[in-house]
Length: 318
Image (cartoon, rainbow, N blue to C red; front, side, top):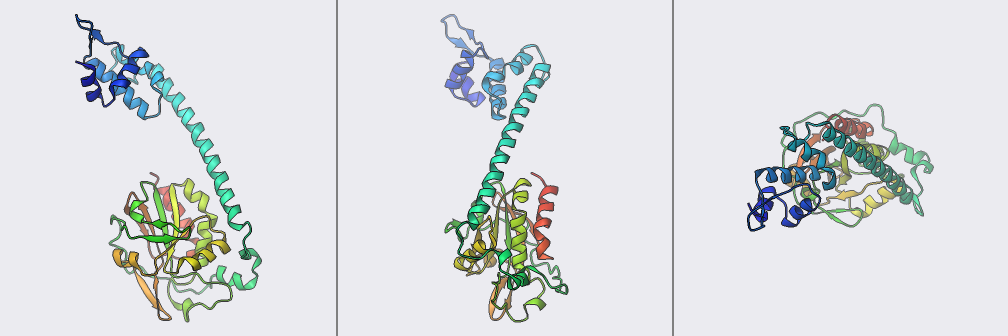
């Protein structure tokens, strides 16, 4: 067969085939007129090179696998030299992962430091008793019950409704890619010295938005290491209000604002009324590749919820 047919059947370019030849990885026969003549063995060799390269093994280091096939083995990795090449590739990949993890850890630390640098808002640990009221949950909070309001969500496509984040970007949950995105949905975040809606503590699942946010802040790096690609908080409060919360609490992630409840109405998320306001009920979505993979609801206690999400991610690795 001609080089163009070999390239087509093997899923590579003719330029790649010539490169493999230059390395001596494939050696085609010759016709009487001197033209190259490729056969089925060449197709298999090129396919093997392509598959190994897709795994991160450089083309130049695929020779042991090809020699294994040439020796009559049924599989290219039936030989000791092939296994040794696997081990070398794994060791190199492990080193790269460790280096990338160290870089990510440094970036997260820099992000946390930058979130507080030059802040005009007093950090929470310096606010005193008024702020402590928001971080400490009463012991007698009513426990929310599972009312089945989110049973329809798992496996549902995430909507493409535009949501504004605290960095000024437009985010669509349907377009966040194959990595897991954790979106914890909450009613509202209080501010020190500002009254919460009347009867707030008596509404099951209402109290605890600030402790919940602090939990996701404190476990942010662990969540990323467990497979979360992104973390967002989401409420109906506007981005200006949310920006104050991000700065005051030193959150290393952005908030999403949905004041018109587009997400709630599209997905059928549960809401409730308090002081004449429509508010989201507390829940958390895990979204992967545009589909809702898992839902946490009801969420209780909110100050331990980040740990619950972390445990689920670790129990359900990709």
